[in-house]
Length: 167
Image 1: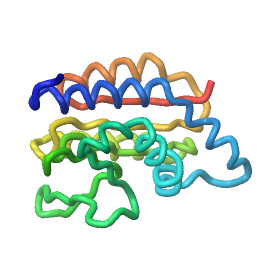
Image 2: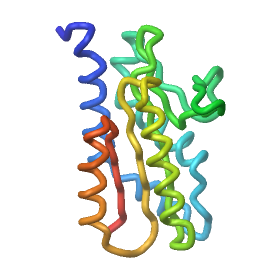
Image 3: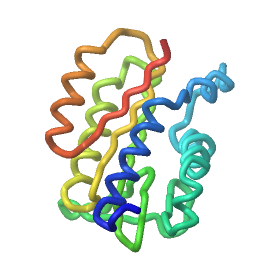
Image 4: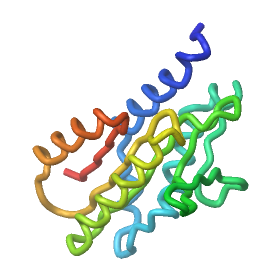
């Protein structure tokens, strides 16, 4: 059995493994001719799959909240209120935040990625034990070397980056 201080790390590792191996493009391909909305994707696909994947932990007190849930935790940074897209809570402790960003065009690519990364870093500054930035890229292009470099830099700040690109 895991000790209390190991449980959040084990949950994070299980979450990262799930997010790395999950294929959200089955869901997005059903939405041909429609723009993929971040909130709808998070509510109808990501949250549901996370709750299924963590069903045993939920029975043991893990809470997973996302858009539309009652009392989604807020936090203040630089005199501004922020809300994370998905939060994992255990024993009243906010252990993991997930910032979700869908990139569906080239026009705002850098701004959208920068915003998600900034949110992830802010959430890691003592508000959450772990922070994950989840980027679903629906655009074209090969950014593997940039993503590897970005993952490495963010990991030095205790922020994990999950970058999903349809191949």
